Length: 503
Length: 60
Image 1: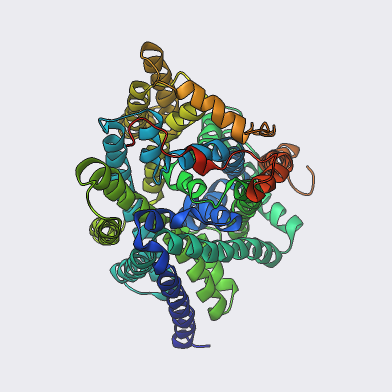
Image 2: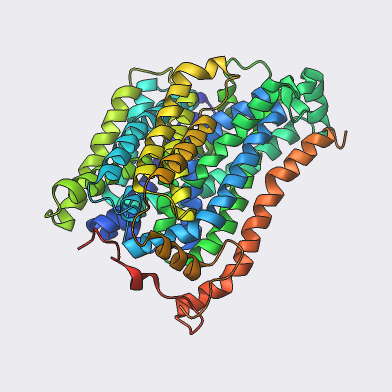
């Protein structure tokens, strides 16, 4: 097939995929006419949808371009990322999801700031406003980085201009997200998740087979650099090696409390979906992550000396597969990007519409009017990301990790304390949120390069927990919160103990 | 070396996958029956979540 024919096949696959996404948006639009429908699909989603949606939202273009690049660059040392993510996902579904779902159902909450505000009886809306500001700023950065990835993916697969790639990706995401709301986002995540799953199952197998099989691949890696095979990588058991492993594990901690992931638990039809969803989510994340690392390792043997390790997946797909399969793999890369951006747009839109407009300024606005504002805002926030991404093609995946850690450091320690420690207070939650976020940001800007490149999530989490606990100890918990926590525990049970009957 | 990889790498690979799977399967085995009871509204099922809604003081 000539170059034009190959590009035609890729474009054909791409156009078909975009039409399917827009179809999902149109199909879901009936559910999105109320605020709860637009932001949580009316809390009616089954286990397999929330499991795939949670994983694909957590795993952005970073999984396919960033983690494969990491496997290429550091070899099996990247397995520490897998360890952190699998444990993070497993703990989120076993520890966090059930009590969080119960609390948010009791409060009729549809956003994470909604939950925190009710949990800490915050009539002044301070928690809402601080949460909305953090979410808004981080989503902006995150969206811009993902749109950058879209531009890079289009230009590596199709040879389009970078700007053209950014614009095409953005147009499709804005369209189906603003039409169909959370339901469209969640069901398109399933489609995108299945594509990612198949790609990361097949690509390493084909890559290792092309490199001569498992034994040959490992021998070639050992000949290139034996450190690539070792768990502690090139630094071994030194301080640098240990800090690097801790940083990699830290990436997965965000699954415990990042707001874009917690909303998946809220949208579940009932608690039964959570027990099933956990098994699906963990099985899926294992295939995602191990597949990405092994793809990078195989790519190192097949295509040594790549200038940018993050291009290993596009290079492998265009060199090893016929054009139509390369087209499908481009769709998978875009799927990973889109499944994250759409969720973030919905998250940021909810932070403004639900947590600011409806709850603080205009409680008199009708549900339908607010949902309409939500649709418009989704596009406006996306345009903000676009304005950053278009002129800045050098924005790379550390920006994704930064936004990922900023959101998680602000919310995870506070959400965990709010679910499991009766003594958590409103002042503690507010201070912990600010401290976690500020520490993550300052760590990147000032400390990181002087402290073994330790990932900002670790100090961000530590500061969030310490400040939440210390300030809570000096202040009083909200009235009735302890009894409420006991009741929630009685109704949902522990992670591995059944709920007490007679509710 | 086992199949071309150091033992430590195999241990890391097992630690990366098995404990997570064991956790979610254990939780599923504990809760699945009770959750089905809740969906059916059976006598042993815990209270439906809706029954608790709007308890927080700052809701009208």
